[in-house]
Length: 410
Image (cartoon, rainbow, N blue to C red; front, side, top):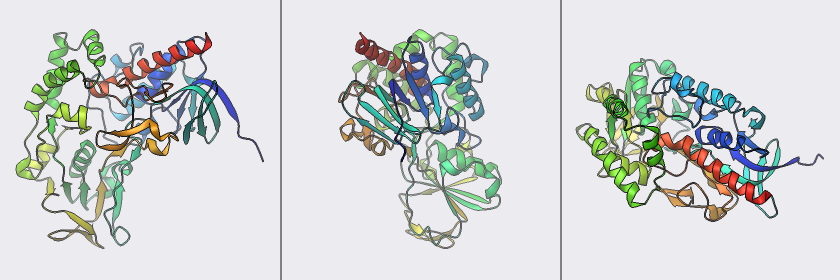
């Protein structure tokens, strides 16, 4: 029986997306620091390689720090292939290839004792490290709800993470369960791509904010210097829960709240909480609309109000609601994702409730664990910049890890 291979490193970074690549890029600058960046897929940004075909980011200038000008060669809003190419180019620019471990999913992370207390298990062996950065994103695992009756349902029941394009749904009646960005975009994709009938079941209140005017305002702000690097760095420096952070959120909500579309007459309630505040404190992401609002208004996407017509179960031919049965050929569960870190981290005290989630990493507000301070969670804290801060979080965590390692080696 072969022994489990062990390797000793200064740091292990779990995940090779925005935050993980930026953490690795910063560590690469530290002379002599031994580290690995683990990625469960066969390439950097594996999560994004498995998304639906038409997906694109909704945040302008979604970038990585110190990218050598790569981002300036790409569109304002990155499509999936743009993003994956950007990740690959960034890894090359920072010479991360020797540190990347592809197909090496972390399956268990445990804090032990000694100079290298962190034990990270992978299918390819065990890594021991001084520090660990968990950069697996808040969307690591699909949240798949059970509707009941799936075994007898005659059609397909897919999570949105399994959906690619509308080709296989031509002429079919499809129910999309959920109204977040994935739900709205997939419903629109189906409606425009030849599905026979598209219905979207909605229960939670949701802000729908047209993306086009948001981009126009962004371009104006950038032209007047409001999106300069200095101003973005200042926003990133604000820690959630501080008065300065809340002032910035209120300022941004003045615009975003005014842009939010009222779809209540169609069965989608508008939240009482303003959009940016809801995103920062409740993890309620507004829909940045690319056409679903128009399709809802003209009937191409039919809304089913889940507060009036709750789903009881699936039947052989469709869905039984509280007011009766309706025929559907397929169901797509746009029910979101979750971190799932309670399945990865052996130390339960690293976790606590936040954003309505029972298992969220506890941090000092700047991605560092207050329980075991050699553990970091880049990307799990927020700044007023939203997702644009992901790469900045990674670089900041890389700074803090380098400081820990220098102290240990002194």
